[in-house]
Image (cartoon, rainbow, N blue to C red; front, side, top):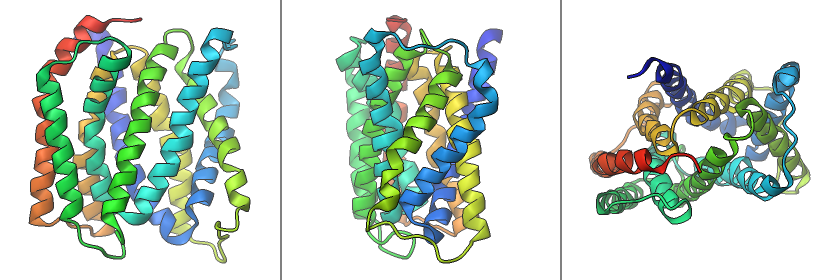
Length: 301
């Protein structure tokens, strides 16, 4: 590995650890607070956290031609992504939701093939199909419980979140060629705060009647360490490595999430779900050679 790629790779690894922890933090926070309140607070905390860093963002006035792409990126993530992820984690376990994220690298590769003209081989499509089959089996083999009252619906919402993450990754790769990653990350946090603010006043949103230390600590973790830290590290890395290479690190999230779910939430997967998880990971690994070949040809657009 070349010296100039070591730091981006370390940043990607750290981002995956923080993101895997976010599934656990969200479950803990959702047990005590309304999901819309949790999402808004994490965005607001991150927005405030970026204030001391404003001088380091530089003059990043959006070009008129980039505005539609910026709006598309923000619509994908944080807006729609967190709506789907909140709905997912209300219905399914952190371990299962984390496993669905294993499909993101394949979805980015397929999306880049359609929208960026990157070459995608038959092996990638075969791996994508196997991963989809595994995700479906994961949902069918899930039983309901306090942590996952409707796992099939929750896993479907997490899949929708991954569709949004795919659009976000492709758009972000384009934008990091012209804007600083720190600026784009701060823009996401501010846009998310504005987007989720009206949800606090909907009749369906419930306000907490008591203070919960663990849930509050989880919200702070989500705002400072995930929305600021993980996204900042990922955006920084994406400005220095190819999109398919960066998204391949998402393969670490399912393993870490299952580990954290066992440690902190006492979650367990059934034998059928372990088989389904193996299918998901196998589908991702099947496509790695094809994805790497495609990324080496893509370059910057």
